[in-house]
Image (tube, rainbow, N blue to C red):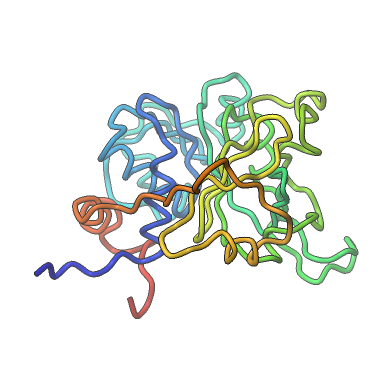
Length: 262
């Protein structure tokens, strides 16, 4: 009988995010679970990726889990350290294959809000962190994966403010606006993985996490979700070996993957 603790939701999210990364890709890494995911991918199925941290560090050598993209471990024996603006320039010039962004709100076309909640810009219900590098990445990266918690308020019919552009109004509206890259290719929540229907660019369920039904997922969404043809697959879960890698080698202090009481 195994003494291994059961997988927690943050470990599941880190694993699913890691699966979006392919070997030999250049990965733009943000703070939090994307850091866990990128390091996990490098230690498992994608050993030849190059990690670009938002602070400007390029592909540092292995060390402790950084506490943020500005943490000193992102610079450990890095062959090159640039200013943040130059890391955005890498995206603009096509030197980044995939990036990850969080959100406070997201709509059916993958447009995201990290600015404010409410309908009055001068008197919002909540003022959020703003763009940071969010808009730069969404406008410039070749492929974007969006990561956030799912509820009807967060998966909203309309964002209270569009900080970062996804597929705008759907169809080819992103390309007509002159933005680079393909835009968001996936959305990952604690309940499911989504992609975007190729023609309309509306959000579509790609897989359901274990124990989640489509009906429950729709209840947690503020707009109508598209379904794939046939049965909806179940999202794969990490094996005991992968869980051990997360806990022992990637985030042993549980900086981003621990939940009190679990």
